[in-house]
Image (cartoon, rainbow, N blue to C red; front, side, top):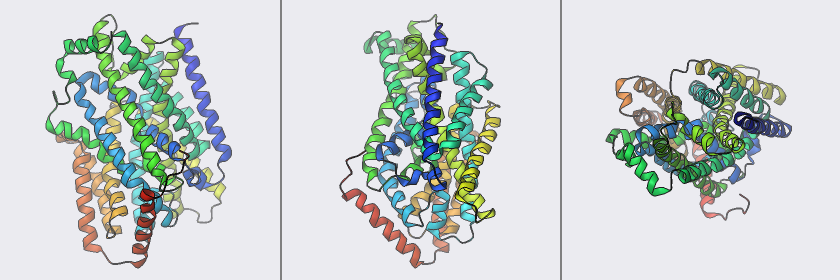
Length: 501
C-alpha cells in the first residue's frame, strides 16, 4: 500500500466513526429541546471538551501555527488572551447563565434568553439577535469549510472543492440528524483526538530536531526574534492579539454548552477540565510551529509552501502513514467540531428564534425538528458558496466572525447576568452598535493596526449602559428572576461538586 492509501484508510475510519456517533445521537433525539440543548443533561467533562473542541476550530492546527511560523512567538498572544478569556468565561458566565436561562422560562437559545430576561413583548430583540447569529456564523462556518478544502488539497492533492465538499457533507450528515447531542458527543471524541495529536507531533518533531538546545539554535539561525513575545509586534498588535479573549462571553456556540449543563455547580469541574485541555492544546500548537521552524531549517530539501500547513506536513513526514492519517484526522476533528456546533446554533436561530415568531404557532415537535434540520442545510449551502471564493485566510475569517459575536453579544450577556437595569432598548442598540463597528472598523486601514473587537466591544458596552439608564423602568418580575438566578448561581460556588465529571 502507498503512504497515501494508509492515510486515507485512517481518515475514512474517522469519518465513519463520526457518522456512527451522529446516528446514536439521532436515536436519542425526540423533540426540539433535545435537538437544540440535549435536555440540559451534559456532564461537566462532556461540556468542557465540547466547548473546547467547538472553540478551537481549524485555526488551532492550521491558522495559529501558520501565524507563529511566519511571525514568531509574538503571535502567541492570541492563545494567551483566549486562555484567560476562557477561564473568566467558565468562572463568571457559566454558572449564572446556566441558572438564569432555567429561571427565565427555561430559555434554550441565547436570543430567547435575551427576550425572556428583559420581558420584551415586541419580539424585536429576538429577531435582531437571531439575524446577527445567522450573518456572523455563516462567515464562521465558511472559515471551517475553507480549512477543510485546504486540508484535503495539501494532504491528498485533491482539489479545494472536493475537500470542502467531503468535510461539509460528513459534518452536515451527523449534525443534520444528531442535533446538539450529536455535535456534542462528536466534539468530545474530536477534542480527545486533537489533544493526543497536539502532544504527539511536537514531541516527535523535537526528537527529530535533536532536542531543545539544537532546536532553539536552529530557530535563532532563522531569526532570533521568533522566540520573543514582543519583537516584531507593536503595542497595539500585542493588545489586539490578547483581546481575542474578550470575545468568549459573546460566542453562542460556546456558551450554549453552559446552558446545557446538568446544574450550575457543574461549572467548577467543567472549568478545570476545559482550561486544562485548552492549555495543553494551545501549547502544542505553539510548539509545533516553533519546532517546525527548526525542522525545515535543518531540512532545506523540504519546502513548506503554505505556512498554515506546517502541522500537516510535519505529521506526514514524521509518522507511519496510518498514524499520520490519524493525526491528520485531528485537523478534520478541529474543523468539523466547530462547524457542527455553529450549524446547530444557526438552526436554533432560524427555527426557535425566527420561525416561531412569523410561522405556525402550533407546529408539532416533529415538524419543528424537521425545520431545524432544514435550517442546518440552508446555512451550510450559503457558507459553502462563500468558502468557494477563498478570498481570505482561515485566521482572517475566524477573526472577523469572532469579533462580530464578541462585540454584538458580549456586553449584553455580561450585563444581562450582572446588571438589573439593562433594558430591551439598551440591548438592541448595543448589539447593532457592536456589529456595525466591527463591520466598519474591520474594513478600514486602521483595522490592520487594532483588532476590531476592541472598539466594537467598548462601543457596544457604552451604548448599552447609556441607553439602558435613559430607558430604565423598575420591573418587579425582572428583579425577582434576577435575584433567584443570582441565588441559584451562588450555590455553584459553595455547594459540593458531583463526583461524576
